Image (cartoon, rainbow, N blue to C red):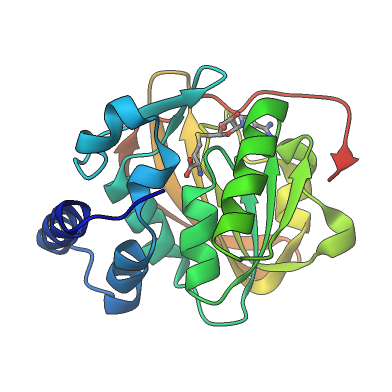
Length: 217
Ligand code: SAH
């Protein structure tokens, strides 16, 4: 994998675009600079890796728009050493951004092909999150509770298990809606059964699908 001056230049432009769209946290912008997005895409798409668009990553899934990744990350307010549960590892790009910010990440993916590819990518970057092949609806109770939970696929509802696995004071960011359109919700858990819910506009994610087996890799 090669990171040329051209790639670096395109990355700077993307970072400026993210800043113009309201991403002001310099740590997030620095993380976007540190993780070359084109490594996560097929070489045919490489030239467009720094455009603000989503791409196929195999198994009918897409890597999220850079703005979406940056926006969800900023809603979470990631602090160094936060424990973060991510649902939908996909390409592993968002996982790398979280790791680069110093979070301790557990990430679940239900497509085996993507889980295997993402494992290689994370190893390449020398990050050490716990990657799990399984069903994100169930979360991963044994490694929780978590400071932050991030769902990167469109959920039909907020899964109870994920709510339970969030620490009091913790934040969950989850797009909730139907197949075409979801509202970006931020939940802050204020006590065992109470949450503050804020809504941040419409997005369009690939759907969160159910799966039964749960194998730790
Ligand atoms: N964060 C990813 C986004 C990938 S798209 C990235 O940066 O590339 C969303 C991912 O969620 C897809 O890979 C899809 O397979 C996965 N997904 C869908 N339903 C799921 C579920 N129930 N559990 C875990 N992953 C799921």
